[in-house]
Amino acid sequence: MQQLLMAFFLAIAAFLAMLQFKSASDVNNSSISSSLERIANLQQQVTQLEQRKQELVEELKGYQARMAELEKQGGEDSAYVKHLTQQLNDARILAGLTELEGPGVQVVLNDSDREMIEGSNVNAYLVHEQDLLDIVNDLKAAGAEAVALNGQRLLANTQIKCGGPTIITATERFVPPFIIDAIGDPATLEAILIQPGGIYDILKYWGIQINVKKMDKITVPGYYGPVNFRYAKPVER
Image 1: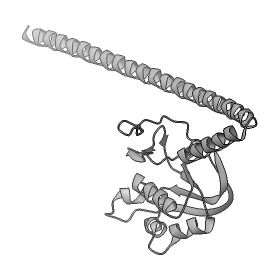
Image 2: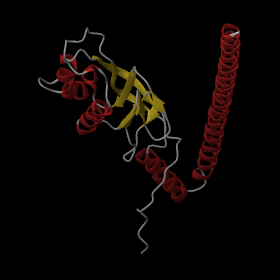
Image 3: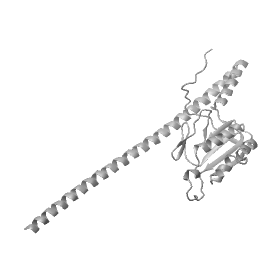
Image 4: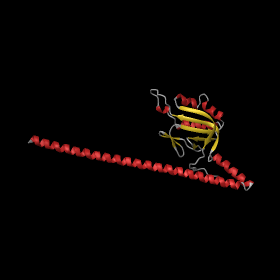
């Protein structure tokens, strides 16, 4: 009788354990399914936002083209209006809102493909925001008149910062390879980057893949992102 009771209690315990395991499994499966559904919804929203952003950029380009045509027509009417139109065009160029072309250099960077030295820091083998900032600053110091990173125009107040495995600018996230286009004197721009002990040598030491190429013609797009000044305001006279 004692053995029968023991067997009965063991059977009940096994049954309860099975129910508990099944319940936990159902909860886990439900949680995973819910998480996957949320991820899919977020991905869909991101895709829709990217599409809408591109549509707005194209609309802006259309408006700018129409405005340029109207200004051209107005400029033909009088010398004064033509003078004002030229000043407006010059201001747009200085503000980085106009697509430009000319000679320059193209710099392509990618993370190191070299085998890591034992005990070294993995971050030394990756392209960081400071590397890009150093290159952009050197190019500007050498007289670059327009600079773009992966097809996005860089303005005077454009931020370049780290975002985990990506680099973030005003409106975009970029992953390697990073392509920097700069308009200016090709020989001068190249010289400042490849000078002994410069940024080129430093990155090469860690195996960072960097290539500097002189170009007879390079195109830098206009800037189409938001321009927000929180503190700076025009002086009223």
